[in-house]
Image 1 (cartoon, rainbow, N blue to C red):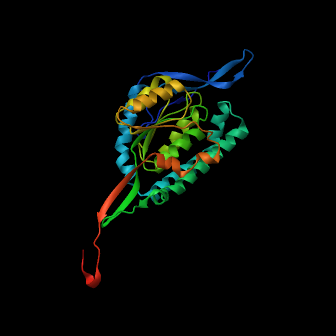
Image 2 (cartoon, helix red, strand yellow):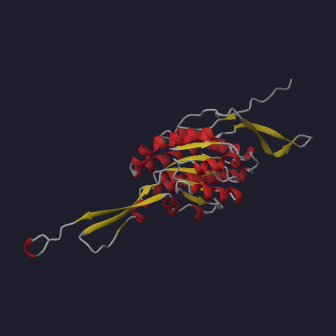
Image 3 (tube, helix red, strand yellow):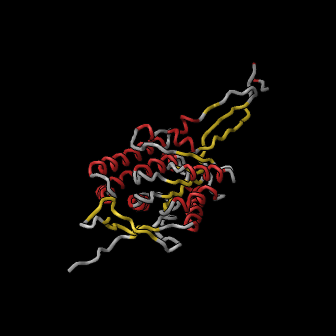
Length: 300
């Protein structure tokens, strides 16, 4: 007697919780490889179709988390990113299975999961080093010390790569949070499974609630809201739709938020570097008076 498979409904991840989308909508995710005599693609999961309200809830959660996350020591943030890599490594079989379900070959899936863990370790190491690299003591003509140091921008909205559902997402999120920022992410619509499984890793890897929020859905519907939300400080777009790029660039001007367009081959080593951390930093310059000591101990 045949039976219906009990398909998993992949929920969204907001504020450390896994709610269903406020809209109540979902879409059926199909296997990328035809199955059966009719050549029909098999439904492998139900995925939430998020709304503007879900984005707003995620931004509220991110803002609540920003003070605590940016206030952590750089060394502690590095420990937490390393813990994420440990937890991902422990669940690599599940990630590989989901990548294969979405049409990726077994060998490519194994390489991608391995590279994801390595990338997290890479940015864990940079957490307490990028500030020393990008800070400076500036020469001035008066009796002052003049320091410039990077500080986190704030809330970053991310429209993750469409064709790289796991490695692309991690490659964008890791430099954002390693620099003390928090983020709201729109996962790949066609390859969303690993994004929510990655959220399950985050929920058990010492990452404070609200630091990373991941929603799923349609980019054509949501990209304008990601870029015109007035409490978002920067937006990263990792796809190639020219109309969406134009809309994001225009909407970003509403509150002078930074906009970045990162359409890269995330499998290449050059896509991991500390300059991606620097992109999401504000440079703060501080002036501090000093006393000059003359001959005989006189101050002037």
